[in-house]
Image (cartoon, rainbow, N blue to C red; front, top):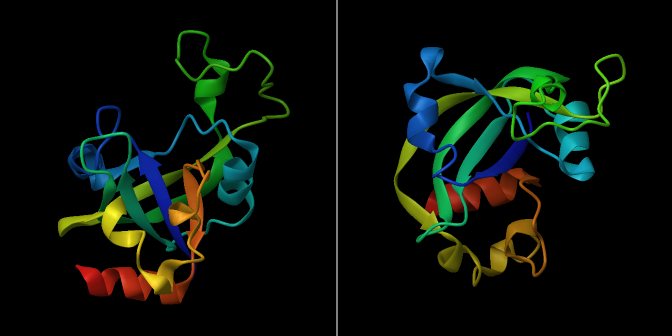
Length: 152
């Protein structure tokens, strides 16, 4: 099993939105960064656990846990000119962009904020707390996962 952190702006798609979806499952579309795409396409497997992180909001932080429910498949939003994630260079026969389905597991009792995570020595190598990292998807080691869960 692998562990991940996936960021979403709560105004666009929140942990509550995921919990309210049919079967509490939704596709994670719109990723337009090659490194994040490669992680979804090549590394994420059904059952992998995910920290659901709210970004670009009043209190950025980890708000819940989800899991990978379906491995990667072409991101169909890239082919739809009416979708905000449309990419005219993406070709359905040779897709550029991929997505996975994620399933709600649970909300945390409180938000574990970015400000709380940053000073933790055990998380010094966590991409989230390093300067200049703007990836929306990142791997988490099991040790980092366990440490973060211990903060709740």
